[in-house]
Image (tube, rainbow, N blue to C red):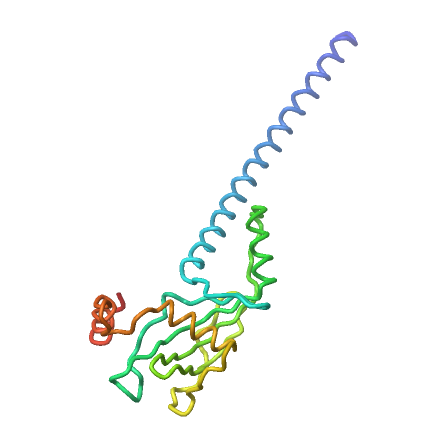
Length: 204
Protein backbone atom coordinates (compact mmCIF):
# COMPACT_ATOMS: atom_id res chain seq x y z
CA UNK A 1 0.00 0.00 0.00
CA UNK A 2 1.49 3.34 -0.98
CA UNK A 3 1.80 6.37 1.30
CA UNK A 4 -1.02 8.27 -0.43
CA UNK A 5 -3.57 5.54 0.35
CA UNK A 6 -2.39 5.31 3.97
CA UNK A 7 -2.82 9.07 4.47
CA UNK A 8 -6.29 8.92 2.90
CA UNK A 9 -7.40 6.08 5.19
CA UNK A 10 -6.06 7.87 8.29
CA UNK A 11 -7.91 11.06 7.38
CA UNK A 12 -11.14 9.13 6.79
CA UNK A 13 -10.76 7.40 10.14
CA UNK A 14 -10.19 10.73 11.90
CA UNK A 15 -13.29 12.21 10.27
CA UNK A 16 -15.44 9.23 11.32
CA UNK A 17 -14.25 9.42 14.92
CA UNK A 18 -14.88 13.17 14.98
CA UNK A 19 -18.45 12.82 13.71
CA UNK A 20 -19.19 10.12 16.28
CA UNK A 21 -17.94 12.25 19.16
CA UNK A 22 -19.97 15.27 17.96
CA UNK A 23 -23.13 13.15 17.77
CA UNK A 24 -22.57 11.86 21.31
CA UNK A 25 -22.08 15.41 22.66
CA UNK A 26 -25.21 16.59 20.83
CA UNK A 27 -27.21 13.68 22.26
CA UNK A 28 -26.05 14.41 25.83
CA UNK A 29 -26.80 18.10 25.37
CA UNK A 30 -30.35 17.37 24.23
CA UNK A 31 -30.85 14.95 27.13
CA UNK A 32 -29.67 17.55 29.67
CA UNK A 33 -31.83 20.17 28.01
CA UNK A 34 -34.92 17.96 28.29
CA UNK A 35 -34.07 17.14 31.91
CA UNK A 36 -33.65 20.83 32.75
CA UNK A 37 -36.92 21.66 31.01
CA UNK A 38 -38.75 19.01 33.02
CA UNK A 39 -37.14 20.25 36.24
CA UNK A 40 -38.10 23.82 35.41
CA UNK A 41 -41.65 22.74 34.60
CA UNK A 42 -41.96 20.95 37.96
CA UNK A 43 -40.63 23.97 39.84
CA UNK A 44 -43.06 26.22 37.94
CA UNK A 45 -45.97 23.88 38.73
CA UNK A 46 -45.00 23.84 42.41
CA UNK A 47 -44.87 27.65 42.53
CA UNK A 48 -48.26 27.87 40.80
CA UNK A 49 -49.81 25.62 43.46
CA UNK A 50 -48.33 27.85 46.16
CA UNK A 51 -49.66 30.95 44.41
CA UNK A 52 -53.15 29.44 44.25
CA UNK A 53 -53.13 28.68 47.96
CA UNK A 54 -51.82 32.03 49.17
CA UNK A 55 -53.35 35.33 48.15
CA UNK A 56 -51.56 38.58 48.83
CA UNK A 57 -53.14 40.90 51.37
CA UNK A 58 -50.69 43.82 51.50
CA UNK A 59 -47.01 44.78 51.87
CA UNK A 60 -45.05 47.00 54.21
CA UNK A 61 -41.38 48.01 54.17
CA UNK A 62 -40.16 44.55 55.12
CA UNK A 63 -42.71 41.84 54.34
CA UNK A 64 -45.38 40.69 51.91
CA UNK A 65 -48.43 39.33 53.73
CA UNK A 66 -50.58 36.53 52.32
CA UNK A 67 -53.78 34.84 53.47
CA UNK A 68 -53.94 31.04 53.36
CA UNK A 69 -57.18 30.68 51.42
CA UNK A 70 -57.46 26.94 52.03
CA UNK A 71 -57.55 27.13 55.82
CA UNK A 72 -59.15 30.54 56.42
CA UNK A 73 -62.71 30.11 57.70
CA UNK A 74 -65.45 31.39 59.96
CA UNK A 75 -65.85 29.37 63.18
CA UNK A 76 -68.10 29.63 66.21
CA UNK A 77 -66.37 31.56 68.98
CA UNK A 78 -65.26 28.93 71.55
CA UNK A 79 -66.95 30.65 74.49
CA UNK A 80 -69.88 32.19 72.57
CA UNK A 81 -71.62 29.82 70.18
CA UNK A 82 -73.88 32.58 68.90
CA UNK A 83 -70.89 34.61 67.64
CA UNK A 84 -68.61 33.88 64.70
CA UNK A 85 -64.90 34.69 64.47
CA UNK A 86 -62.30 34.18 61.71
CA UNK A 87 -59.67 31.47 62.02
CA UNK A 88 -56.78 32.40 59.72
CA UNK A 89 -53.15 31.63 58.94
CA UNK A 90 -51.12 34.50 57.49
CA UNK A 91 -47.87 33.96 55.59
CA UNK A 92 -45.13 36.58 55.89
CA UNK A 93 -42.39 36.59 53.26
CA UNK A 94 -39.49 39.01 53.39
CA UNK A 95 -39.51 41.31 50.37
CA UNK A 96 -35.86 40.59 49.51
CA UNK A 97 -36.61 36.84 49.50
CA UNK A 98 -39.63 37.40 47.26
CA UNK A 99 -37.54 39.52 44.86
CA UNK A 100 -34.87 36.79 44.65
CA UNK A 101 -37.50 34.18 43.80
CA UNK A 102 -39.14 36.43 41.23
CA UNK A 103 -35.79 37.18 39.54
CA UNK A 104 -34.94 33.48 39.24
CA UNK A 105 -38.34 32.79 37.68
CA UNK A 106 -37.96 35.65 35.18
CA UNK A 107 -34.57 34.45 33.91
CA UNK A 108 -36.02 30.92 33.65
CA UNK A 109 -33.37 29.34 35.85
CA UNK A 110 -34.22 25.63 35.51
CA UNK A 111 -31.75 24.73 38.26
CA UNK A 112 -33.47 27.09 40.68
CA UNK A 113 -34.87 25.28 43.71
CA UNK A 114 -35.99 28.12 45.94
CA UNK A 115 -36.61 27.20 49.55
CA UNK A 116 -36.12 30.51 51.28
CA UNK A 117 -37.46 31.41 54.69
CA UNK A 118 -40.90 32.67 55.62
CA UNK A 119 -43.19 32.91 58.63
CA UNK A 120 -46.66 31.56 59.34
CA UNK A 121 -48.80 33.30 61.94
CA UNK A 122 -52.08 31.97 63.29
CA UNK A 123 -54.79 34.38 64.41
CA UNK A 124 -58.35 34.53 65.61
CA UNK A 125 -60.15 37.67 64.42
CA UNK A 126 -63.29 38.99 66.07
CA UNK A 127 -65.14 41.46 63.83
CA UNK A 128 -67.99 42.09 66.28
CA UNK A 129 -65.60 43.78 68.73
CA UNK A 130 -62.74 44.63 66.34
CA UNK A 131 -60.28 42.46 68.24
CA UNK A 132 -57.51 40.04 67.32
CA UNK A 133 -55.95 37.10 69.16
CA UNK A 134 -52.46 35.80 68.34
CA UNK A 135 -52.03 32.03 68.66
CA UNK A 136 -48.56 31.21 67.30
CA UNK A 137 -45.78 31.98 64.83
CA UNK A 138 -43.66 29.49 62.87
CA UNK A 139 -40.35 30.23 61.19
CA UNK A 140 -40.28 28.02 58.12
CA UNK A 141 -37.52 26.96 55.74
CA UNK A 142 -38.93 24.70 53.06
CA UNK A 143 -41.93 22.75 54.28
CA UNK A 144 -43.43 23.40 57.75
CA UNK A 145 -43.64 20.67 60.39
CA UNK A 146 -46.96 19.73 61.93
CA UNK A 147 -45.72 19.40 65.52
CA UNK A 148 -46.42 23.01 66.45
CA UNK A 149 -47.05 24.43 69.88
CA UNK A 150 -49.53 27.26 70.14
CA UNK A 151 -51.59 29.02 72.75
CA UNK A 152 -55.07 27.74 73.42
CA UNK A 153 -58.00 30.08 73.03
CA UNK A 154 -58.45 32.35 76.03
CA UNK A 155 -61.00 35.13 76.29
CA UNK A 156 -58.35 37.19 78.11
CA UNK A 157 -56.06 37.09 75.07
CA UNK A 158 -58.26 39.26 72.86
CA UNK A 159 -56.46 42.49 71.98
CA UNK A 160 -57.91 45.73 70.68
CA UNK A 161 -56.35 47.12 67.53
CA UNK A 162 -53.71 49.82 67.56
CA UNK A 163 -54.26 52.04 64.49
CA UNK A 164 -51.75 51.41 61.67
CA UNK A 165 -50.07 48.57 63.54
CA UNK A 166 -49.23 45.30 61.72
CA UNK A 167 -52.10 43.60 63.57
CA UNK A 168 -54.49 46.34 62.49
CA UNK A 169 -53.42 45.94 58.85
CA UNK A 170 -53.84 42.15 59.05
CA UNK A 171 -57.24 42.51 60.69
CA UNK A 172 -58.56 44.99 58.11
CA UNK A 173 -57.26 43.01 55.11
CA UNK A 174 -58.53 39.62 56.36
CA UNK A 175 -62.00 40.91 57.27
CA UNK A 176 -62.30 42.52 53.84
CA UNK A 177 -61.18 39.31 52.13
CA UNK A 178 -63.50 37.03 54.15
CA UNK A 179 -66.59 39.13 53.53
CA UNK A 180 -69.80 38.73 55.52
CA UNK A 181 -70.02 36.39 58.47
CA UNK A 182 -72.15 33.22 58.25
CA UNK A 183 -75.86 33.88 58.54
CA UNK A 184 -75.59 37.38 57.10
CA UNK A 185 -77.93 38.33 54.28
CA UNK A 186 -76.45 37.51 50.91
CA UNK A 187 -74.11 34.89 52.29
CA UNK A 188 -76.27 31.76 52.15
CA UNK A 189 -73.63 29.59 50.46
CA UNK A 190 -71.01 30.29 53.14
CA UNK A 191 -73.55 29.58 55.88
CA UNK A 192 -74.55 26.27 54.30
CA UNK A 193 -70.91 25.31 53.88
CA UNK A 194 -70.12 26.04 57.53
CA UNK A 195 -73.18 24.08 58.66
CA UNK A 196 -72.16 21.02 56.64
CA UNK A 197 -68.56 21.26 57.89
CA UNK A 198 -69.64 21.60 61.52
CA UNK A 199 -72.09 18.70 61.35
CA UNK A 200 -70.39 16.26 59.01
CA UNK A 201 -66.78 17.51 59.27
CA UNK A 202 -66.63 17.82 55.49
CA UNK A 203 -64.98 20.93 54.08
CA UNK A 204 -66.50 22.19 50.83
